[in-house]
Image 1: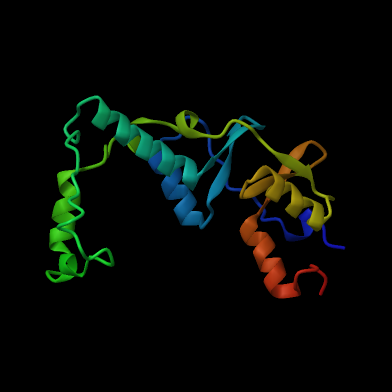
Image 2 (image 1 turned 135 degrees about the vertical axis):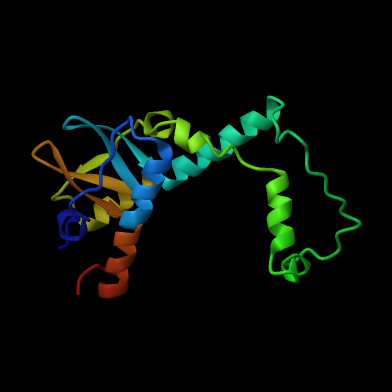
Length: 180
């Protein structure tokens, strides 16, 4: 029977709460992971995910618009004038220059990721399971908690992570039963 320790990703990519969000996003991209535990010393105090960073960026930009910042102009859409609801082909006739110009009219707050830290955006609830947890129980835990990854611990220390991608890989390699 497969256990979490059999499929977990290790060693872990970790970050500190003081790391700027932009650096955290670059670290996740460089290591091809979608999340990382946040550590202070040897203690895990949270987790930061690509979704946390994107959500922070979006909410920070929305707050700037509501506060009347430079990008506070509302975008109006005329449903009668816009009859093509498919892909915006016309925007690409010039190689996408018009689309880039439209996006530039409503810029995001580029400094949000540089001036805020992981501590500002991380998820503080840390969920972990023992390394010996059967794979089926781990998958059920992930589904029940509606999360994309769970930390794996052994003897009180975090030793790896199992993500939904790891679970999908096992299903692809061994079938639904996980036995192969």
